[in-house]
Image 1: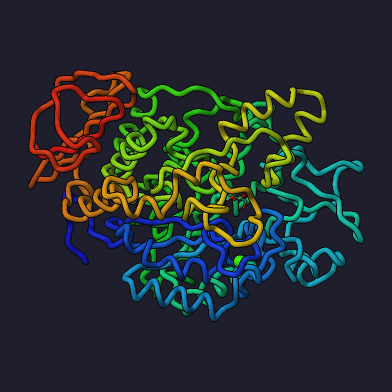
Image 2: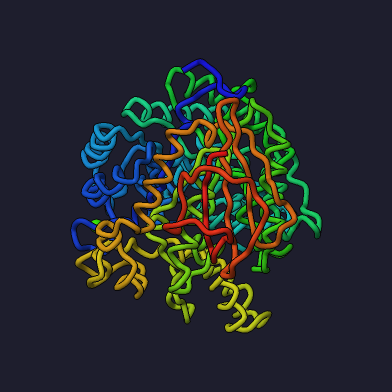
Length: 550
Ligand code: GLC
Ligand code: CA
């Protein structure tokens, strides 16, 4: 495809809808309580039924699972709990046969401390792999600088036998690779080719802006310490490395690349995605998912006006050489319906459909996270022992065990923001463990599986699942929903989000009521294309979503 629509070069990945799978929590095929590749294979028809074009698989590589696979021990092996390479090939084949592309997670800012490179690297100062990681003797018996790990605590770990410190911007078991070493970059290009040659269609790149470290590793200022990601993402060589990666590894293949751009500001976004630069196709920029976080990263209420303003701001800042993503959730965020919608029984499905309408009508490639098509909700956590996430455990030690805040305050915040809300197993049936496993699940299944499950959704024509399918189909038949100009009609309205998408051929109007009360707004009339209520009334009813053609 080389033609343009509305000034945008057409690309398959701009027109695609992506579905993210977190394998551990998707479907267990052998009763060990852990989701696996055969489980995903069984559910290819379910995925296909949504009409998505691409599956993004969260890490499926050999890993000791300190961070559920985001700590890779061997980039060329499949995690034993998930199956083997034959299972991977079978899944890729089945997806391709269903017309679905497969992208995998490239986690190369860091590896596991159990990776052979690190085992060598830590063994002595003159080991040939020493420079694969970032080592420092420390200063006066203390860590080299005040960098904090994203997962709490110092980002430096003193290591025997050498007594030097290594850098880990995430967990202690996730040492940062030294990208300034050309051998490391060549290794990464090589492992990318390994998977591309096995038929994968691209990569989601984990915390990719962090790969270049600031020379001299200067201390963070007090202000930077609360959100160090804005420093870690801003190393001087990141663009050089991404351009090299494009040339050395990606160029011969027809891929989709999307970088997880933690710490990247809107101003910096074109540097990563402008199509004349040869870096990434798209990034996940964090403005939307940080809307309800305060300066310390704690939960804070959000306002619709601020939420809407993000999309206008992004649209104004990105020209036709840049392509956005749209995502409201993933394995690091709470559930969409509990966070942006209303998960009380009378509004859950309506508000989930409203969020689906928004996801699939904004400008940018939409990413659906598993279970959001069922309007799965946050989990009713009541105790620290119910969580799995190492981040939460670190925060608990730092904040509660130190006496800084109470357990109740801690849990109240985590009820809003915990990553584990997204990681509870998929709810397939109303039965035991939601049909996820015949064994004991690694993380508890939400008790509301009795009412919220795929089996039920598939039989109901009005289900959220079928609504997603309908909205995906609508997006596919209206180029305006992909490439159309974006205009917010009511930026200051506190309850209603209303915008148009326009190409020279047509204008579609999207009207969304982000509240549980009727509201009347003055909007142009048109022909109804989709909506989450069966009929049309002058007022927008609670959580009503409508798409009309003007
Ligand atoms: C990314 C992943 C997250 C992981 C972290 C470290 O943010 O999405 O799940 O914990 O990187 O790899
Ligand atoms: Ca299993």
